Length: 150
Image 1 (cartoon, rainbow, N blue to C red):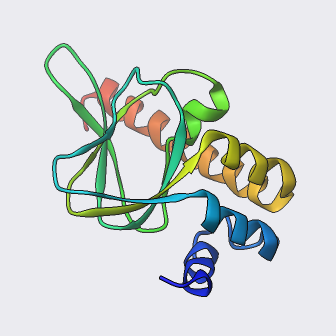
Image 2 (image 1 turned 90 degrees about the vertical axis):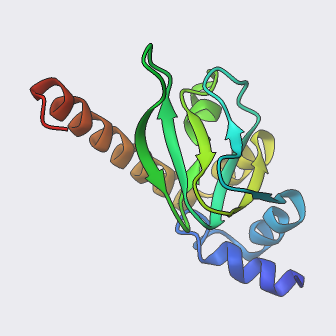
């Protein structure tokens, strides 16, 4: 894939769509394309947070470990990000992410991701919007679980 195609790909992701073109190019040079097959794990709950992943194509499940086995809390698809919570919370991974279908991702190292967010207020605001949406989704799910209505 050419640099221009990579930059065009980066521009499709809401979190990176408004950042400066030079930063988009840096993301292309500094990130790594990764492909996962169905049932392959990107990372597990408790792992060190070393990168965030942007879903280019495919579907992944986010699950948390429970005494009765994994509990799926969300499903991700194209243009969504995963792994950013542990990076910014400076905590171990809070969940396990597993490919459901063939999954193509862009792996962005912790340092590069920090730099992009630090340099771009628009990216930082989009990240806050994403995190707020996740918190609202998790709160609603906990509420449904407590009330017994999944």
